[in-house]
Length: 458
Image (cartoon, rainbow, N blue to C red; front, top):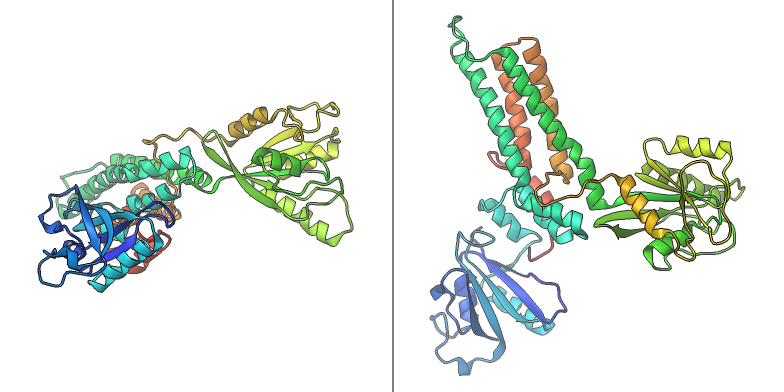
């Protein structure tokens, strides 16, 4: 990290643009292009400066004769000194006007002076490497940028503030206690009269840790649902109003609506926000007996959508017979099934079970339907202090830790030697360390995979 990097940190096309510069020569490079000497600035201060279209003509940071240099823009320079910056390095943020010409020219001049363009996520990667955050917090930065609703925002904010790190620190302390007691047992194995740890107590501690890791791993399902959107399949016969309902929920003509049977041949997906949580609605082909091969493929995809959904909205506009009820109930096992009676503006039908009555065409009952969908999701309200795992990488590390810990528990139950138990305990510690990257050497390919989807400038 001996080089100095730069990148646009804001979306192009706005009234203002912020260009980040970070690295050992950040102050010198920016000063060579401006009327202000960043090296003289106090940390965490903002300064007005003129930015010139050519560097200084002498060895001083700022040209004493600026009239001989063409003015590019009037800017604000935010100066951050190591280690108290986002990256932990000397950094300058140039706030200039958002003109594409100005931004491109500033980047061009910075590169001419010795900067290089930052790779995606490189600022955050440097923050991790400089100890400003751990890997779980770095992943939370990307999630915070990508958050689309209150739930995903709170989830990312909780992780960014170190909620997962704190949990793992407590688990690590318990595991180290367990390891230390076993190591003492090994060191004094020749003294049969000394007992440093009762195996029953060690087993109880290991089982407590296992239950804690299991709770964290189980939270991944909720975390993924919040990040990806909870899948909701809209199913039913042809012309029952599935596409009309999708359009009504989205408040947009997303799906084609027609009186012709079998109009929808494939699934159509879109998301809406209900009470701060994203729901991914899937409009499906109507279920009916047909000889049309293309429509048959669509119906098979309807069944696949049911299998992948967390919630199924079964639209009816006529009383279903017993066979239809049994078939739908069987296909929806393990999923929340909401029966929705549509077209109440035309007629009311007799249905013995619970159902939500709506008119998708006229928007009647949609508030009650959204309330039923939210309740069926059974997602607790996420606050900034809740601990929910949302990264697949973190989840797999937890699963590996549980597998290793299961061997520890088995070894303790079978009263195996302390050296065998300690070996598996070290594997548990290694698996948990993968989540934060603390206390272990993280392979380069792992870091590349974590930061590859970051935006440039972050």
